[in-house]
Length: 387
Ligand code: SF4
Image (cartoon, rainbow, N blue to C red; front, side, top):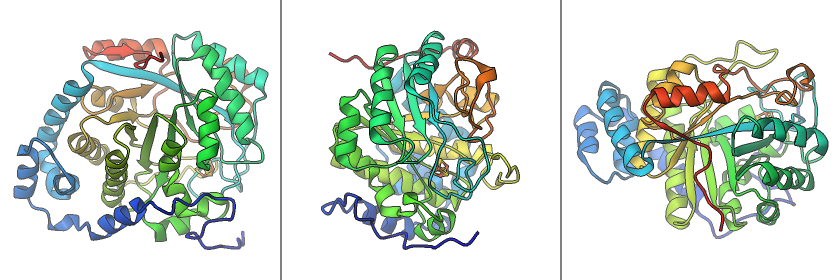
């Protein structure tokens, strides 16, 4: 399909510009300068021996030279995780309330040209879903939509957040990037955690993957976490979709993005997600081979050793055995009872919209709790108290 490709670096008129922020420039410059091939075993050893690790150690730990040291990295990562999070592993589930999307991301099942069943839950249906999720014992929810401002406007997401406050103690959102006043409104409605995946930090590659829609505007997406913090959100989560581009550079940029915002906003709770591409409806061949579990584990351990206090989520994109292995080691949060379709929590047979991607671990909450305990860890439904 012929698309009119507009500039991916220019803001649209309604998009808020953070004129005073140079975080994006700093991250892109650092990423462009990062030549992981120049790191040697001695650099990795030095990085492992350091107590407080900075960007230079992070560079070494993400390099191919660190791969033979993966066991040592994992051992040190587990020590750091225990130091900052004890035995706790938080549980949550995502709730997709709409899969309409105006963007054309060529790797995603929800993209506006993919012929899938679209659905948008109304408030009663959302409540039914939330009730069913709350009945499983979960106290944390992540509300997701496809990125359509028309079908899922801020008011609609706000109503979902208010409703979530009735059933859950912690409400996060993973929706389209918005201006800080919109984040402030959603914060008032009860959301206090915002997740935005930059997908890839390579702006040239980004341009070839995001062909239409507001998501095409790279800098607006990049600055979403900062706008969310300005809007009063307590925490923000970062991720690159590993496998879209050079995963070492993308992981490095993700870490630097989080690190620089943490320095600028010391009160912010920072966390990482570590998604790899999964096959999607009608495009099952999209499943890159270059980021294997070993490399994913390396990235997770490098994040942990660079930012020991940051949260880390492992999603159902990964298989059971891998997920069980990384909790307590680097990951601090894990999803359970997951469906990436629309409307299937309350009644499996009534799913109205197709899945965003195939999940690799379909365990329910009870099974996940058992798996966490079997690792000698403690399942935690909520780790935050509002006064
Ligand atoms: S990745 Fe997000 S924005 Fe892109 S098509 Fe999928 S749902 Fe829409």
